[in-house]
Image (cartoon, rainbow, N blue to C red; front, side):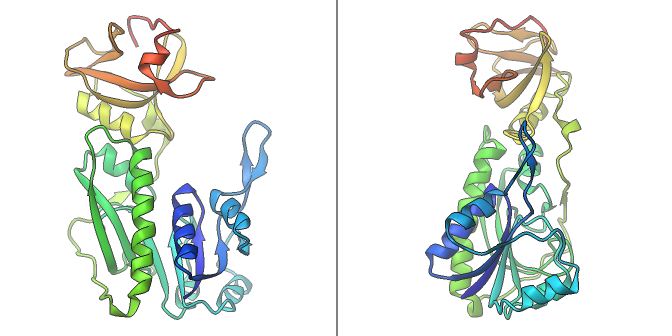
Length: 300
C-alpha cells in the first residue's frame, strides 16, 4: 500500500522499519520539527526523522496541520492509508479524510483504558496487571475511534516503563503489518463507553519520592517513571535518580537507608529495595556497582 507515516519518538521507529520491510511504499514521513537539545542547545531531529533520512525517505515536519496549504500537500500524496504512532500533533478532519482508507493509529494501551499521552507510564504507575496495543481507526476525538486489532500482554511486577515501551513498540509494528495485510477483512469494533480512563502527560512534579507513601506505591512510581523522567530523592546532598525497584523483604522507618548487602529505603509500611539508580553526572548502574564507590547516608 502507499502509506504516509506519522510518528516522532523512538517508540515509532520500529513501526516505520516494519512497514518498509513488509514492502509498503512510504510516500512521506511526517514528524515533529527538530528542537534544541543537549548542552549546546543544537536543533536535534526526532528519532523518526533521523531514521527516515537514513532510509532515504522524504520527511516533512510542519508545526501545524491546520493550514489549507499543509492539508493540500498532504492530500496530494495520494496515500491509501496514513499510519500514526506517537506523532504529537492533533489531526484535523481534512487530514483524517484524505487517505483512501483513512488514518490508523497504533495506541499502546487496551482502549478505552488509558486514552491520551502517557498510556505506558500510567499503566505501570497505577499497577495494571496487563496492557497491550490497539490498532484504531482515527476520528476527531482523543483516541475514541473503533478498534481493528488488539493484543494484550502482562506487566511484570518489576517491569519498568522503558522495558514495557520496547515490547509494546515491537508488538505495534507487528500488528500494523498484520492489519494492513487484511484491511478489508477487519471489522471496526466501537470502544465501550464504560472503562474510559485518561493517561495525562507525565508532570516532573510527580517524580519526587515521598518515603512515607506505601511501599507498592513507591515501587510503581519508580518503575513507572523509568527511564524518564526518573523518580528521585535528595540523598546526602545529591539528587539520586531511581530506575528500578521492588518491595524489600524487611521493614525500616520511612526514609531510613540500609546499604547492608543491597540498598533499601524505609517506606510508610515496609521498605523499598532499589535495584538500579543514577548519581548526578554518572550513568545508570546496578546498585551493586554504585555501592563500590559510594557510601550513602543513613536517611533520605
